[in-house]
Amino acid sequence: MSILAPNSQILYREIHNREQHHQFLNNGVNLNTLKSYGFCFVDKRRSDWKQTIKREFRIHASWPDLSRPSAVEMEPIENVEQLDQILASAKELSQPIIIDWMAAWCRKCIYLKPKLEKLSAEFDTKLKFYYVDVNKVPQTLVKRGNVSKMPTIQLWKDGEMKAEVIGGHKAWLVIEEVREMIKNFV
Image 1 (spheres, rainbow, N blue to C red):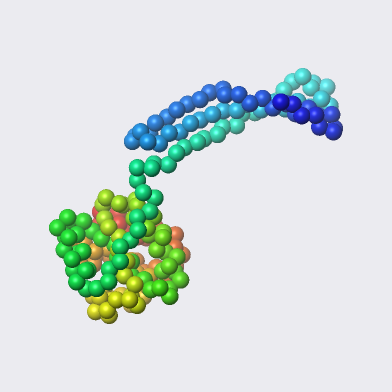
Image 2: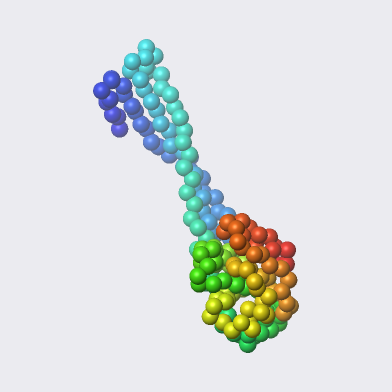
C-alpha cells in the first residue's frame, strides 16, 4: 500500500510477519503472541531517496487466565451467631478470614468494597472475605469486632482478631496494606 502526499513524499508501508513466537506460561492457559511488523519510509525530496529507513514495532497480545475469577463477592455477616459459625468453620479449616467493617453511608467504604472483592480473587483458595454493614447489625456484633472507625479491615485467625487496617486514606494504599497483612498471616 502506498500513499502520495501533497509534498511529493511517498510513504510506503510494508506490513509483514517477520517472526512469530508462541509462549505458553506455567499453567498452559496464558498465551503470549509476539509479532514484529516492519515499516519503511521513503522521502522523494532527498537525493538518496532510494534508501529506506526501516523501523520495527513489536506488538504483544496476551489472554487473561479465565480459570480463576476476577472478583469474588464478599459474603455479609448479619449477627453474632453467624460470626461465631464462620469463625468456628475457619478454625476447623485452619483458614484465616478477612472482615470488612463498613457502613452504607461511608463513601470510602463503598469505594473500597469492589477493590477488596478483586483482592479476594487473588486469595480465593487461601482465605474468605466477609463484610459487616454496621448500621444493619446489632451493636453487640460491632462491639465484638472492637470497631470504632470505618472502613476497618480485620484479619481473624483461630477465632480471634490478629491484625487490622483502618482505611481512612486512599484505596490503593489500603489494598496494599491489606495484601501485606494477608501475606504475614497466610
